[in-house]
Length: 332
Ligand code: SAM
Ligand code: DTB
Ligand code: SF4
Image (cartoon, rainbow, N blue to C red):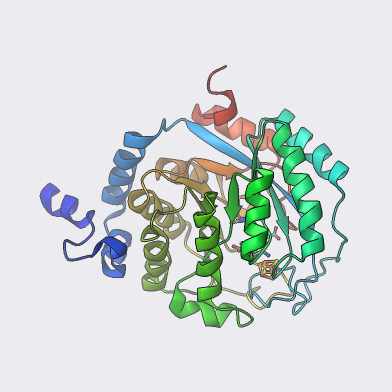
């Protein structure tokens, strides 16, 4: 019984180097008995991480709304009517102020997000200043700005950006049902440019958009087969925002969300797996299961980009209750 279970956790022997995990292998993980899946995820997690430490990333929307992409989940798309007000880009001082507050609250990474298909040359000048300023404060920097051309990647690298977030979001076969204004290859191309420039890659996806288990496995296999796989893997539970095409998507069973975290942990053993959007709608018990499944990062702060996130005090209380502590405080 035990032997059979262990075999399932390995990539199939026939898989070539670029295809360490077949979709079928990953799907088999999803279908394991819950206790077996959790046990294996814990084993892998403890081989590589202190299970009581959680990395805290604070998000800031530096340019909100009016995006020219049609992502079906996103309240910031100009194609939908989610009541998000378009804003101008924040100035560097406002960003520094928010980063300082995040650092004081205990965050170790600060992620700047913009509702762009891709930044313009002019946008990049401001972003470079923001990255330099936040980095000078001793915070890890992350940005998510849409697609990047070669020269923009080089500018970010030069500014000292530590991580670039660019999600694959779902399986290639399901992508066209969610987004029509770009294709999967565009995402892969940007990720490759970021990787080649020597920046850390943050890439994950969204579950609960009506995808099948096979498609959920397809997303994880895509991420896990990247060479190397991303250092940071955000797993978002769809926030169903009124006015977006996915506002009435069928809610995912919370245990299937936990399974997704566990499968990401097993297939990407050394990655920071982030329990991302959707935490405000999640019970503490489900969040605790996500940590048991190998999540070791969260978005920290009352706001994601346009939607809410648990308050800092609530998260502190939850971590205390679980005997967990922030990465930034582990040596104190
Ligand atoms: N515009 C850039 C892009 O799409 O790459 C960066 C910002 S975009 C808002 C970053 C990510 O937020 C998306 O890739 C998606 O995974 C996530 N996201 C957006 N809306 C969401 C929602 N309603 N629920 C969960 N995640 C969401
Ligand atoms: C990621 O994977 N999730 C974050 C971050 N990367 C940029 C964004 C979540 C956005 C949720 C919807 C909103 O607040 O607008
Ligand atoms: Fe634009 Fe990013 Fe939202 Fe898509 S997810 S509409 S690219 S802000």
